[in-house]
Length: 105
Image (cartoon, rainbow, N blue to C red; front, top):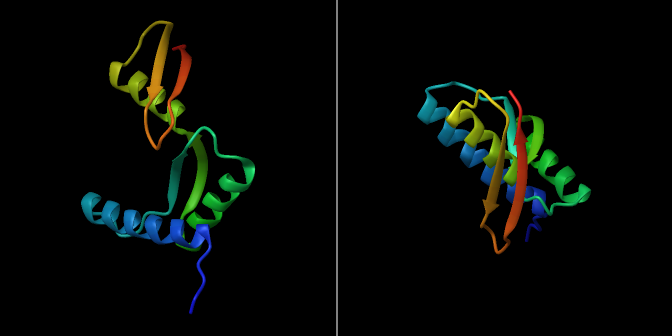
């Protein structure tokens, strides 16, 4: 019987996501990635996520908290040309995170 560690399970999921993204984008080999993680992840969980990425040949350039990623996405979509405050609600995974982000362009 083989024992799997959390980073092994994460690696399996990342491998599948990598395969699906490559197929969807028509790219032969995705290497550099940015991965979102829950805001409450501690250093050990973040390190395990980075290890999982490396196990499947991904170079994780950066880990970004999910609420931060949502705020960045919103700012890009809205293409802000001035300073704004954005309130981001992250309602996933059994948590309720709220972030206030100042967008400066």
